[in-house]
Amino acid sequence: LSSRTPVAEGVVSRRAAITVPEDDFLGSVKESMVRAASIVAALIVISLLIGMQFTNILSKSLRRLVAEARDIEQLNFVSHPGKPSRFREIHDVLTAFERMKVGLRSFGKFVPGRLVQMLLAKGVEPQLGAEGREMTILFSDIRNFTHISEQLGVAKLSEKLGAYMSTVTNIIQGQRSQGIVDKYIGDCVMALWTGPRGTESALAKKAVSCAREVEQQLSKLVSSGVWQHQE
Image (cartoon, one colour):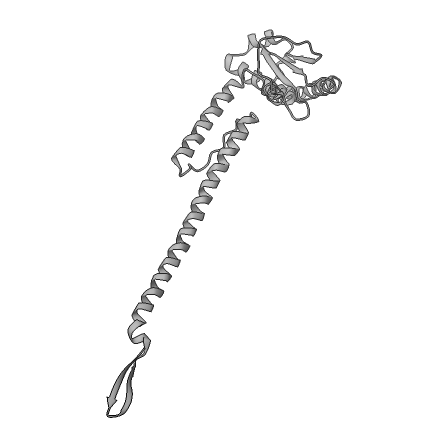
């Protein structure tokens, strides 16, 4: 910075100048501005990092919600325990989904899940009525079950009956058979194969293959000693 002042000495006109470094006056101001700019930049970076972290947590919670909703849509009621969401509203929705799954699993014991999936795929709402359709039906029961049940206690009978029905049901509802367990009648398992028109022959073949596999697996069950008392 400089300042000039006119100085008159007789007939000669002169100017006196004073020069001072700018930093002597503005140095502290510049330092304050640089310091303020650094603080603002640091705050912006910290805000961005916090925002990214917040977005990541929220995104994970929302993905869990979408996954749970898709599971329910596909009638997959398996529980997926995980860490509670940090967002109370999302946590409440996830908790409600888990409770819904418990109720639907209970309801699924009375209504075949694959039948419901077929209705959902067609967009058909269940209603009272009837429709003629060709289908294949399988009945499987235990020979001499009345005699067997008279010889066993309740606990032992339940164990053996559970082993039999689990074996048959898993085969019928397996990926290869794709059958529908319609009902359990005492020791009898009733299953059916139905689908879109034009698939009756293919489904009948699956039912026959399923019956053969049931026979093989039940023979192994007998050989394992579960029904050894029949011999």
